[in-house]
Amino acid sequence: MKTALIMEGGAMRGMFTAGVIDVMMNEGITYDAAVGVSAGAAFGCNYKSHQPGRALRYNKRFAKDPRYCSIRSLIKTGDLYGADFCYRELPETLDPFDVETYRADPMAFYVVATDAKTGRPVYHCCDLGDGEDLDWFRASASMPIVSRPVIIGDMALLDGGIADPIPLKWAESQGYDRNVVILTQPADYRKDRQSGLKGFSALLKDYPVVARAMRFRHILYNAMVRDIVREEKAGQVFVIRPETHLPIGRVSHDPQKLQAVYDLGAQEMRKHMQALKAFLAKGNAGRSEFAV
Image 1 (tube, rainbow, N blue to C red):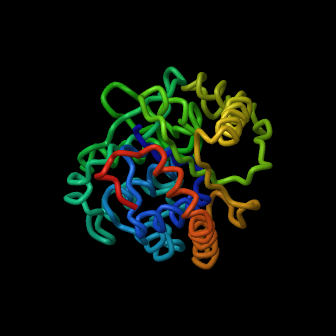
Image 2 (tube, helix red, strand yellow):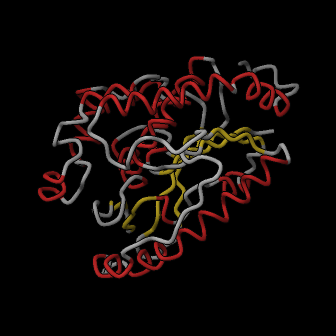
């Protein structure tokens, strides 16, 4: 069996995911592939570069820096999260992303973005950790309205959560059949219909299919959650999620809140570590190279 780790987005709810994966890394858990969406891509890439603690560290350090995330950045650059600062200066200089280790690790790392012209998901394997891969991380996390589409080749790309917020089915279609899913919402959460849809349509007039996808996103998301719950009950997928709604918004400038949500993720993973190891061991029986 082939194993995959699927990480949904949720902006700063992604600090929960960062806590989960850091505990996994410290325990030596390995996967054949990881698939990240939005914050799941931006933070999850540190799994392949073997950098536990990095996502928490730079988020706390720059939480109040207007170059990182601010209305000023949105007005000045068109991106709430400053593209040049977050995806060039930070990974190259301020808190270096370990490109060499990223390339050496055999785990395939996929990100999901949304094609703003078609509204369809785009899946891309980022195997180099170079500038173009960082553009894919940024594309996957580029929330509509508060981010410019990221241009890669002939595609204009936006947040992957629009078209495929929890890409478990895609991972299964690629042959990954022993999968772990990290969700950033509790078990009872179901997404409501997006408010302010008329405003979305006006602001996304250049990308009408994206506006349409936003109108039906709650239906897509809730259907995916139902499928995941069904597979979870059947023992086909292992799910890690917060017990209650996380005490953080999509944006946070409070280092203490970031730490608290990260700690919740770490605690939840420690609580279920033995069950996770047992789940993965069943799928890796006979694979002597797999170690936890």
